[in-house]
Length: 209
Image (cartoon, rainbow, N blue to C red; front, side, top):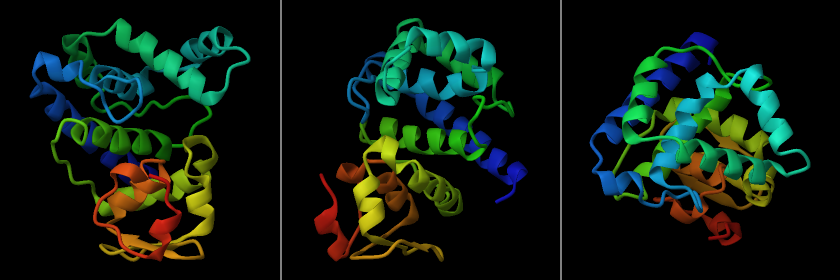
């Protein structure tokens, strides 16, 4: 997928997420998301912080978290952002950065795509809502997520199974098979197998829930 198309999918999903957020009641903003310790508001503030994070923001973040691991850094920064945010400020940021082409330094253009696709699910699934991903966008995101599996807890399942999408031509890996919709395979690749749906195959025995 070329960069303009990737950005189009990013912007479309951010707008869809903004629509989801705009329809939430105040207590839903404070409800737990699928990310342990993160509220819905925390997740939303994190997603829209992506286009706001340049070198000027990244350097102090690294200094604040010197010596800490990736997951600890993410948790601390997400809670910091969420503490200073309100539903109104988060929605305003989604409007301001609606068509932004900025991304966090050192990341690829696919990283903000993963971010918004998966975190939108972290919100909707936690609240009992539904959001269907573009299978094509999910496939691009899953390929990148597989290279980052060591960060998100899915390394073993990615290395040990053959994943087969049922809604487009996408097959990755070797071993026992996990078969299902592309968006659900992305969730597995991002360490969210416990909430993935409509999957079949003998590879599911290797998936930690």
